[in-house]
Image (cartoon, rainbow, N blue to C red; front, side, top):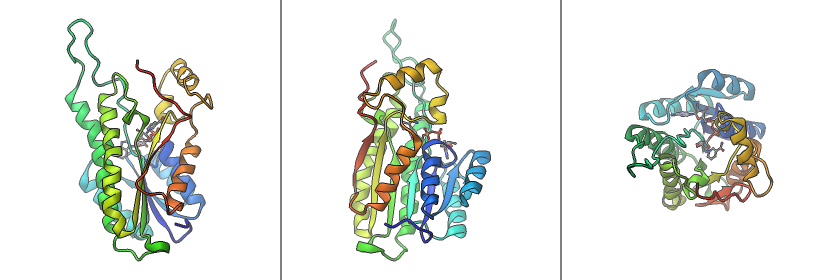
Length: 260
Ligand code: NAD
C-alpha cells in the first residue's frame, strides 16, 4: 500500500513511545492519523504536531473503542491502516513464587485480568472493529483493502519470572495473528505483528538507570536499546509491502532473554 494523503490510519497508544513514533512516521508520509489513547494531554499535543486527531479511548472498553472509531472516521474517513500499540507493562508484578512456602503467592488475579483486558482484548477488539470498516472500502493494488500491525513482545516467547500476565497477553496477540490473517485475507486485509525487544520509550524510562544500563548491555548487537523510530520503520514496511502477511516478526537486536 502506498502511504499518502489518501490514507487514513488509526494508531492506538499513539500518545507515547512506539505508537507515537508510528503515528509520526505515517503522518510524515502524508497519512491522516487518528490517535487512540488514554493520555489526553500528550495525545492532543502529538495530534496537533502531526495534523491528526486525538480520540480519548480506553482500548479495553468496547463502547469507548466504538466512539473512537466514530470520531476518527468522521474526521478522516474510513481507515485503511490500524496500528495497535496501546499496552501496559505489568512486568514483575504478577506471579513470583514464594521461596519459603513454594506458593505462587503474589499472583493478583485482578492485575492478570487487567493486563489481558488491555493488551489482548484491547488489540482484538480494535482489529475486529477496524477490519469490519475496512471491508466497506474498495480495493487498491492486488485488491488490498487494509493493513493491520499489532504489537506483541519478545516476552510472548521468552517469558521471565514475574511476567506471567504480560507474557500471556502478548502470547495471545501472537497466537491470534495468523488465524485472523487467514480469515481476513479473502477480504484483502493483511495482518502482521511485531515482537519488540527492549525499546527506549517512557515505559522503559520508568526503570532505574542501572537496570536500563544492564538491559542495554544484554542486547547482543547493537548494544543499546531499540529506538522508537526503528520500530516505526518496520510498521511502515509491514503496511507498504503488500507481500507481508500473517507474520510475527522479532525486532530485538538478537536478544534472547536468559532465564532469571
Ligand atoms: P508507552 O507507555 O510509551 O506507550 C503506551 C501507550 O499506551 C501510552 O500512551 C498509554 O497511555 C497507552 N495506553 C495504555 N493503556 C491504554 C488503554 N487501556 N487504552 C488506550 N491507550 C492505552 O509504551 P511503549 O513502550 O511505547 O509500548 C507500546 C507497546 O509496545 C505496548 O503494547 C508494550 O507492551 C509494547 N512493548 C514495548 C516494549 C519496550 O521495550 N518499550 C517492548 C516490548 C513490547
